[in-house]
Length: 457
Image (cartoon, rainbow, N blue to C red; front, side, top):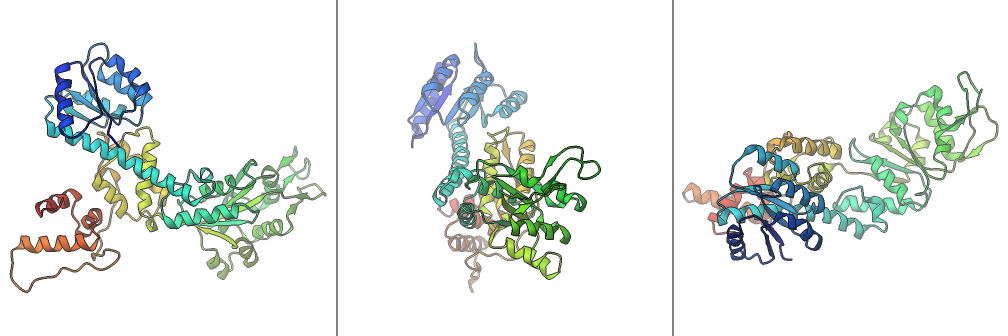
């Protein structure tokens, strides 16, 4: 697909010059304009991948034009061009959404380098987000119900497929997983893909329930049924009628309250406090916990009969460290939906995201990315902006095999030994540069430079 480029500058000679530079680099779809006021009309008929904007122009300057482009064509990556290296202006344009800036006079190599970086950023975000969307579409019948769950991992897609199948019945679902993996998000997706989607979704934190008020909170009560009951109250079961009742942190429920909950699940009906006529519990139950319920049963802290009631439709969400590639997919999603969607992630920062264990899972990743956006004043997240510590592995492994350096029995120059070791790791990782750099514990740019010197591009 052709790259469409817009170049706006009030100097026609300069426009002709850069157009020649771009055509020499193989770009054909180039639009030049020396009147910035005509650009809004251009945006209505043409979609540009990249826009180069001169900052200092009469009638309308590049800053105002940048605002117009980002408002009407947010997918267009903008690169500012200026004859004045004014830090204040540069920071202002970056904050408004510009990806990069160039100083006049612009040299061909500078122009090409900036253009390639902007295109790399644009394609990376688009490919990561499309990867998740297409994966959901292939795995699910109703991908729109699961659209808030961002993943391209096979285990997760298989889990979502199971979730969709369970959603078609009224079976009670148990969702387990570490803190921060998105248990409530999955519960809402199950609700949205079920026949109860038009009904309410009511979430209850079981840890916050008082034993004395359990029946009143769950079943509701009649006016005057106890001291302080000044009017009728609808309980959680009635609130969720026709929909889903989500019982979060069920592993922290006391044994006494577990018995009361079990009766509701078994009998399918309840009687509000102060009333005598039972009512049908027309709800679908979804429970969630970050605890090992089987272990709690062995420790006599969770009722065995309640556990058996919950375990038939068990959905376990794997932690982020077991689906590391999702870290990049999620990071791209958080960036695209942030207040600074133009922010990019440096290649070494992406490697850091992949190497980290994420003990706080998706919730931690979201916080790390949001904080990094604030620290990345120039709009490009570097490893130091992530504020996470990646422990170096004690041994080098590809995942398929251990990489061993074959040491020649003959004495030879250090450079040759280094070259052979780098190429052996490169071959062992199936020529995966990112993984090779991680195993060798060197920067990706360093690896590129080494491979180039060996005649490998």
